Length: 128
Image (cartoon, rainbow, N blue to C red; front, side, top):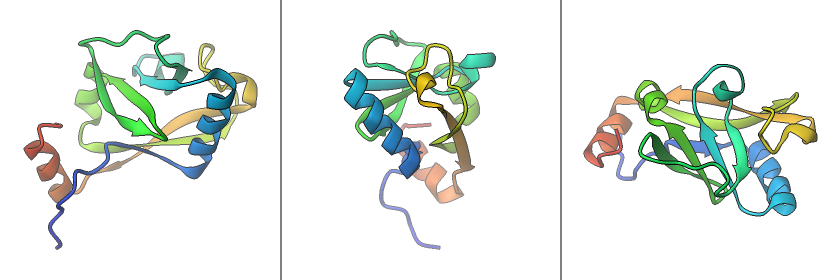
C-alpha cells in the first residue's frame, strides 16, 4: 500500500456538475453550496449566489469545487466526515431556492468512504 502524501479532497465534482456550475456562474456571478442535511430541500446540496446564504460556526467548509465553496452543517459533517462528497447532477427539479431549479437539472451528492490511509492523513491535518 502506497503512503498518501497529499490531503485527500473532502469534496469533488463530476464533469457534469462543473459544467452546470460554470453555466450558473455565467448567469448569477460567484456561487456557493451548502448541504444542511435537513428534510426535503435540505437533504440536497443547495446552490446560492455567493454570500446570500450566511454561514457561521455551525457550518464546515469542506473545500471548493470549480472555485466554488462547499459548506456542510457541522452536525451533518459529523456523519459524513469519513466520506468524500462527490457533487453530481441528474435530470429533475432542484431545491426551491437552489439556482439550478430552472435548468431542468438538480445537484445531488454521491459519496465514497475514505480509505484508512486517507483518514489518517485527514486526522493528522486536523480536518476530521
